[in-house]
Image 1 (cartoon, rainbow, N blue to C red):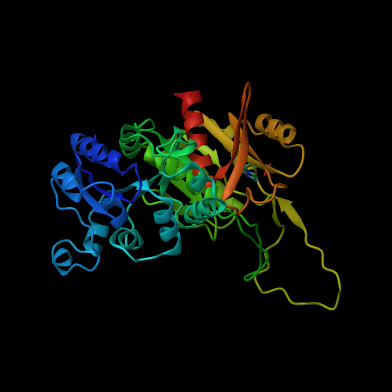
Image 2 (cartoon, rainbow, N blue to C red):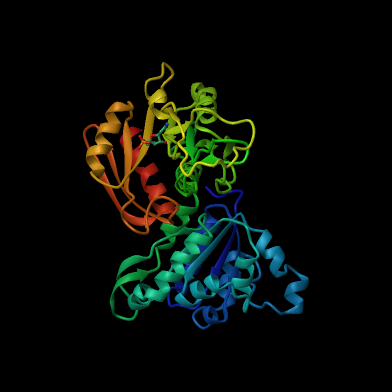
Length: 396
Ligand code: C5P
């Protein structure tokens, strides 16, 4: 139900615009307040008056119309919604969003908003496949990881061609705005990002982990109604709104923070790239350069946080680890699954270019004690959703 929702429907100029009328009707039926913004192109396909009658609100079309700006101007429109749905989103609109253009009301208010954006692309299948369209989408996914891409569907198109590019049906779009709260009442504890192991007051050992995968898992779980706590290492990206964050520095700090939260958590996901070793001694003073050409550091092993969780008397009902491997992915993954007492391990191949650590994309194999699931290359946002959906399917 969308009873307290204020949905702004942005319509751009494609034949699928005729379906937006039905979308507005369904949103109203679900209890949402609806406002519509149309591009010039959209008005060639469907009349603003139709959308005004269905939404019960004036339709906004102009950026530079003094009368409209005196009513609800573009900045107010950007602040007003709880959800923004771009349906259909044409190749042109997507390109304009990627270029940050403010040449019309609709792209301007997307530039000016921080509200959740849902995009339902619709275009000819060749336009959808065009490398420039795909590059625009990839870029937008990297810049706006919280935006949700809905579809497109594949099938017969208005132009007579067959392929991917049909707008998702309005019913499916409405469903995406109000996902079933399958994780309501569950508390997820997620470790994410790198740890930093000090050598002296200014130097440390660390790694390239960004926290993108952890954030994607957290966003997916939040959307399904979970309470999410993230224990994050230094330099971690900002966590999604709604996450309770505990920021730590070293592996020892992370272990302590995990132990403090363990009793209250239902699922534990260890996504952090924890340093395996830390310097045996941390110098209180900055280490000085000596006369020697070589310097040896003595390192000691850090505790294995997830293995501690996996064998803990207060073990959560589900414990999931990650493994980044450059060879024998599945074999090492299976060994870690058993050694660390996990239910599932998500393995990614770090020897493949463009995926895993610090990249925007990932491709993983989820290994359990009796089954496996391959998730082919996609944005971390999508992989995060697929992992959470898979865990729900297997567990609840
Ligand atoms: O053994 P490896 O570091 O490859 O295992 C990776 C998994 O173990 C990840 O889930 C990671 O978060 C976790 N881990 C941990 N504590 C460590 C090392 C790894 O929790 N000290």
